[in-house]
Image 1: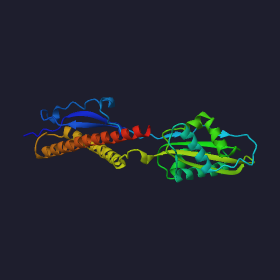
Image 2: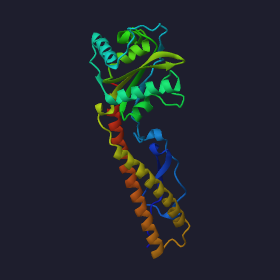
Image 3: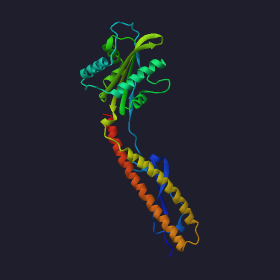
Image 4: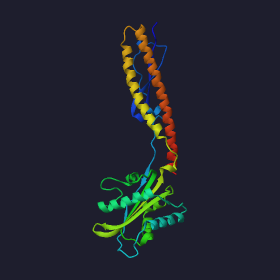
Length: 294
């Protein structure tokens, strides 16, 4: 008796892995030697949510402001005073107070020091490090961060906050309803040959404020992708071997056919399992991103 094997191949694209894979489906009504080749690939757009979504992280960094005012005795700046004046503006606009976060304060201090050392006044340093890098280096995990910079002499803490409030981009950061935390650093030093002040505000919405995403699940999806690719390659080799096997009968042929059919079943099962995992991961990302936007 000739053992019938899997003969029909449909195609599926698992977009997360950026590669084409196929699903081989058993068709007991046809024998291997009736094969005429693979079926065409199916567009990824025909598949239901087979891609792995990414979480949204945002950074707000308006152009820094520079004061040309002459230094005054009253131009002393303090981190605590700037936070207090910032929160006064938020309360006046019906927004909750920002809570000081020591990691954001550490990021702000690192920014001030780096600008003095590097003699630059930009959100991105000459080495290419920006607000996100500062947050990462300080161990601050976020879904949203912002940065305000000020250089020069101001009429105290009120003066520098007023200057930021008079700048649309900086005002937007101060009055951003999604921020919940703040870190500030100020320092007096030599910049471009003159003694002056640098002030930095770092705003943030922490990662912990939104539902957690199962990172282990994403790792498992990637591991499955690797296994799917391996099985895909093995199936092609075994299928070619069976197509070229003669005669198509006998114990050896039946053994190879059984092994091939078993591998197809394993492959299909893994594809379906991975699609379910991708759907669950994407659901978590969707919930997370909805939180990040509010």
